[in-house]
Image (cartoon, rainbow, N blue to C red; front, side, top):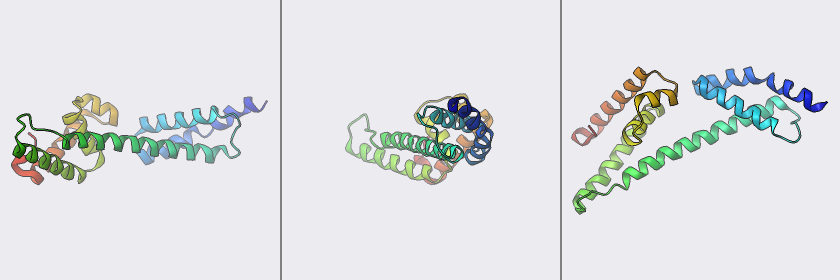
Length: 165
């Protein structure tokens, strides 16, 4: 009997989770995924939680934090790979220049908002198309282009002639 009432009780909180996380993430698709993942985790529990509403919200919070950390780690790894770039000539001066440029780019990118930084990294370093980025971030292709223009302008202002073209 308890298992037949459990799903209905938990699903009653879906809309609340969706509203809460759509507001926090500013992305309805990510909020939907988060709410569904939270519900799934609760449904997979052997014993239902005593306070399902609180448990769902805490689970959603934990999932969001994990996703943020993964994304941040991926971005950091990508920028670290840039720092490790070796000049193809093996010329020590060029290698130092490349490392300095990578650090300067990383510093300049860190001054940008997260989405703007993600657009630059995903397009220029990971080679994603604007359409792929738009789908990942739930943005229009036009907004992705604006973020890219903003990032490039910022890099040109911060790095001058050293900025990526």
